[in-house]
Image (cartoon, rainbow, N blue to C red; front, side, top):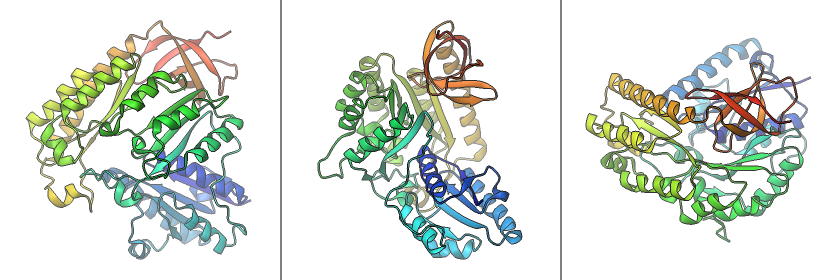
Length: 425
């Protein structure tokens, strides 16, 4: 019985694309294995947004080279943002790889599978899983047109290309028939959805359509760009009952000069005003954000402005990373990476310490409260799920709750998760 193994690193879009690739391979008669040594096909779905992620990719490629020497029939496939336009160079550098294909380029993958005799008939679109998770990802727009100076994504995933609205609605309806209760709509810049389609549908219009799908309980979407968060979209979030009160809104920096050099398209004050609008329009909203520390030229004073903005706005979650120059990006070409690594680490730790204190305070307010969660699965013997505003909750029970909406009484809080017990009869 042939087996496949998929290794995925990076964003939710990668995770969604790995699910699609797995769907194809299962359709071809392959079975999933967690052991790459036992696989006949290994797929690496890669990320190079940070140097650390790229290092893991290179480490895996070296590891698989050794496996292939002992197991010549092993097929190694690489996709994700590691795959650039210079495929011939990659093939010379990594001869152990049988196929490099760009993110979402399923036709290239299928053409290879057809040539290998793995499949006789090429399907036009990736199959949906027969038994999907209760909460799953649905890509709605690929690529990005923003070209933030530090970001490699537009160079690897290309310009924005939206999926037609009727196709998305059809896919979601089919997923719901198969047991899905919650969908997260994905895009590198999800707010830009539809501008490239003939009918110019908006994300707000898509949310409105999906809100009418029977059996669908929750809708999320990410990643948002602050400059593209329209009043129409904010109104839709506030008014549509299935759209969850959780918004990912990357800040990146609280200093205007750094934001300008990052080519973010907004000022710190404009961002702050947007947060105020969101909180006044959607009182229960939970906000998460992303921050980059140590961008070229960042001074202590500029970094402190970021800290001040984080302290003032008190986000539920902050994802922080030290600046990592990426070849081909504007920042790598234009600016010297002149903030010492030690300073970057110190600033990263300061953000993490501040956010730990903020999240501790926010989550402690939920102690003894009852929260509704959608149960997504089990970890270490405990059921887990998320609230509408994306709080991770764990509880113990011998009963079966997968895919159910249940009430949980919170009896323990931390900055990262909540613990409780089921009170649903």
